[in-house]
Amino acid sequence: MTDMVAPETLAALLDGTLPPDERARVLAIIARSPEAYEGFAEAAAVHRQVNAVPGGRRVSWRTALPLLAAAAVGVVLLVPRWIAARGTADVVTLVQAADLELGRGPDAVGRRLGATWSEAGWSVLRGAESPLSERARAVRAGVRVADIEACVTSGDSLALTGVRSELVRLVRDSPLAAALAVQYATLGLGSTLAERRELNGQLRTLLGSPGSMELGAWLETARLAGLANRREFFATNGAGLPSLRQIRRAIGTLPADAMATSLIQDVDALVDGMSSGRFAASPLLTDSLTRIALAHAAD
Amino acid sequence: MPGTADSVPPGPEAVFLAQLPTIDRILAVIARRHALDAAEGEEFGAWARARLIEDEYAVFRKFGSRSSLATYLTVVIANLFRDYRNANWGRWRPSAVARRLGPIALRLETLVYRDGYAPREAVAMLRSRGVAETESGLRRLLARMPARPVSKAVSLDSIAEAAPQSADSSLWAAEATRVREATETILHRLLETLPSEDQVIVRMHFWDGVSIADIARTLHTEQRPLYRRLEAIRALLKNGLEQSGIGRSQVADVLDPETAT
Image 1 (cartoon, chains in turn red, purple):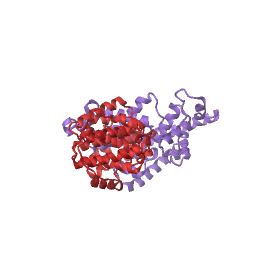
Image 2 (cartoon, chains in turn purple, brown):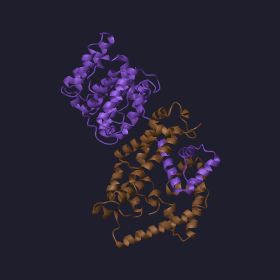
Image 3 (cartoon, each protein chain N blue to C red):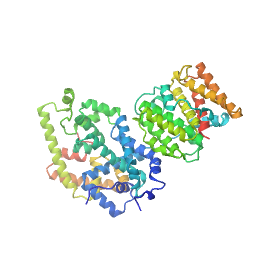
Image 4 (tube, chains in turn yellow, orange):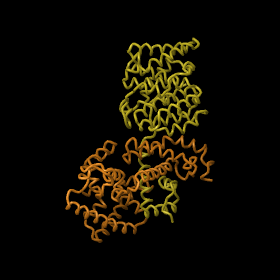
């Protein structure tokens, strides 16, 4: 008789679903073979610990509700054709240029920005399984691609795990981009800038609303820079303002309807605040950025 | 028929992606349990994910729904870690005592005797990786493991700190190891007379320090009768060891590992 217990049989033992005679046979193997016992003991210990860990990240209603209320009152939902223009900086370059200085190592980002730094709020508005427009999906993907870039740059494997899972969920549910989900699922700290640029470029194309992804990425990068108190990003000669001005110019070409006007006001306020330095590291700025991202991502 | 792609709707790739949060949680638990640093954890994670999707998601195609998928993945990834460790640690084999004392002891032994870190460095590394054990607790853990030759070139200071300080202490350590091994040989013989489930319970409780509540949950047995059952087994083993000439302190070392010095 072999001393190996098949993984699924061992899993059934741990789940308590083995028939009594098979359970007795498996326990006899585990009792007799040190190797089989080692495999059982390790799997059982991991199983206990996995089940002791609360699953998934929770969104704080206290944080999300005011933002959602603000989004409902003041923000427009707009097809962002304006950023679809070629030549907009890619996410990797933007986050690198933001020079967020979030520290190094596991949980570095959480320690720097707070444990809830990646809570987006939109999962409160819509369940994970709710149908999502491609535009909103692209905005969310842009947010998460920026988060991933921040995690990779910081060598934060812990935070990377969470935001990567969210991006994979978004991508796998997209009719055209689903094929990229596995590549994002296996994207690690060891990936190169070129690999991530290439992958993000493919995603931007396949999501079918490239301007939206860039909008999400820009808003998230700026939000992180605000949270990290990286004033340089918001300075006149910083990495953020030129990109935002580019966006502002694109918005100016939109048909002048109420929604466009509202969005232009939002972005103008950001440009003014950043130009004057008033918004650097201000909670008000962070709130504005989150509000705009939510408005687009929640559609 | 189990084991075909058709039995895993809507396709193994979709299942893999849907299970990714679970997979990442399992990987994180294993990394923490074995005190891997960030780079090691990430490297193992990338390697394990690649194993899960290779051969057209063979791991998922083989799944026949006899258990929950999450538990199946837990077992598969725990096995993968063993393969990964064996592949990366080469011919290094942890001592039986370190195996018995659990993953942190394994890691400590590896850092000191395989990688050549001084004990204080190894202890500091484990503490920096989130190991909850106190510094003195880790040092006590190391003291309970047999001294081994350091397997790679290291500084003289490290060797001096890790090795016994004198010929007397070296003899003492060798004698302690001999007594411990003799005790364990007799214990194994006694264990073999017990029913299989009792043998597993003894190893889990006395060797791995698993609580009775956790043993009950793991083996899906009632917790309350388990206390009496374990007490009866303990008395039986204690008598058997003492009748074989094993001293009380050695018996306590095996059957009361937490109180042994």
